[in-house]
Image (cartoon, rainbow, N blue to C red; front, side, top):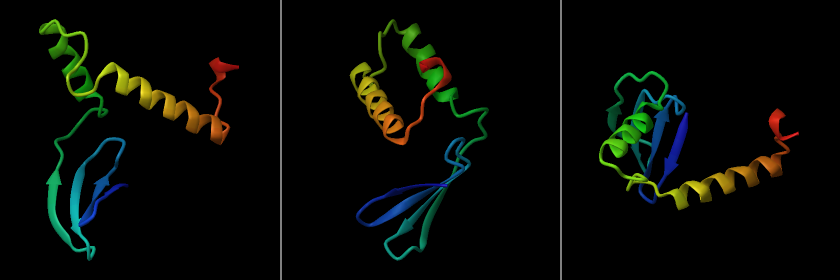
Amino acid sequence: MGYLYGRNGYLEVRNCNNPEQVILYDGNHAPVRSYPIPKQISGYEYEIEECRRCLEEKLCETPFVSHQVTLEVMKMMDQMRQEMGIVYPFEK
């Protein structure tokens, strides 16, 4: 499960690595609405489809997530791995 919390409630993502359903809860933990997710292969289909679209439109990057944002996220993930002591075999 994955959760995204806000001021007035939260979202629960069932199987966050390959989402099956998202449920919206109010501030009292009562379900408000459910959003079914279409069956996926791995969850990366959307990234592949966006890459295809960008190539067809001759875009160097998607307007949804810039290269700069991607680099910032990777730096944060590297910092978290370092703090947790996670080292991949190819990094040794």
